[in-house]
Image (cartoon, rainbow, N blue to C red; front, side):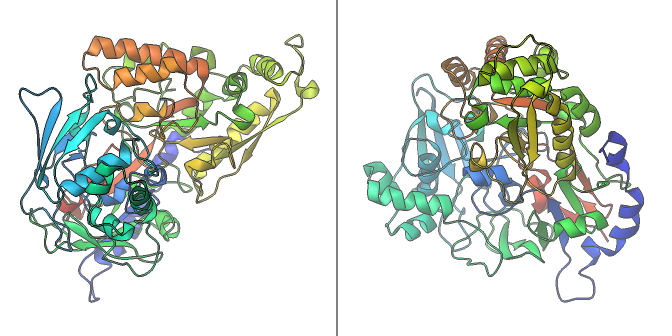
Length: 571
């Protein structure tokens, strides 16, 4: 069965008939307050959305209102200042300097203030300058020259390196980035994190890095609240496979109190896979085709976002080692992938997307999309076989023979299982590429991670920004680092100096003509090096029931939960 566009609206009767007894009404008659059940395709394995795995798992879909920052991503992926946490202003008379001021009341649920320590830890962890940390990307933070403040201070001055004022500076130290530094310090056995970071104390830094990398891992079972203090309108109450990640109001929250007293987040690994087909949820934000049939069409509910508004692009990331270490092998495989057919059958109506740097929602993207990838719209099996021969030394051939004289090359494609749509996409790719000399194997697992690429898998299906869940932002500066050599977001490991220099310049360029020029240069170089194969706008299902108010579909990596403290339960 192929998931086609019509199947995005198949199960109207399922939701209309079944959800009446689910979600907001399930709490009636028991001793719990009314609960909003929110299902996501994130795999909530950590409190830290900023590590390689936390980013890939889509953890920010669950934590943006647990750990707020100086900004958050709004419904269209735009940066919105969060003045409950504090303010950030550009300093006049100083080159590329920002002043961060925490709100006096801002504190974690354990009564420890949000302060300089949390800011310095976030910078050190994500700047790429300090050993041991495993951030998802260094975008923006790598450009900060210094953070000036004393331990415990409620303000700090952040200065960029000369000529390196990050274009998307408003997003820095945003939701999900300000982990509790005092918890990391306690785990590392230091008085505070600021002094060891300033002194480059390697022993202490190694322990702080370990605490940041893995000290916030979340597992099913009793929650150690001392390890997971919240600084937002919600805090974690409990976490289990059968009950989801349960959030309740933070009693010490100084801002507007949350509207709903209990939210259960059902991510991958919980029993959401069993409940999803039955419509037993109030709010849904998942990749389309996650289960057979799909969720869709409830009256009064938002449906899949228009492909023209999408901030994420589904793609196949190719390892720059193993079977794909030779660029000709990557080009050969791209030549047999049926991109136009995949877009027709699995995107929900989106066109083939040819850009890696700009998403369909980007105002600059539309005219550029048709300029690239023309040679890879549909399979060219002769070219694929010729490139495979050249890469493997099996002889040039005459360009007309079949695969009978080729030694097949195995390609293992991974993705987060179970996802029915991706399973069917891999089957379609396997059928197309068989005649080109590739044996494509589906090696999906529920726990696939980015570090699997080049080891256990040769290619990964991601939704953009190297996330397996929601992805993207209105400003593409951060996600552009998927193409920069040496950045952790570049899972492929490929990327020549031309692309890396282009990304570095793109990240600090404001002029629209200059950004267009850079984008074209980067796309040209990327199609030549083929670190990934862009497919189409990532199709997602975003819906909620009539009884739920205050919901605004979130198109960014933060998902629809970006404003969950404003959700209401109707009566």
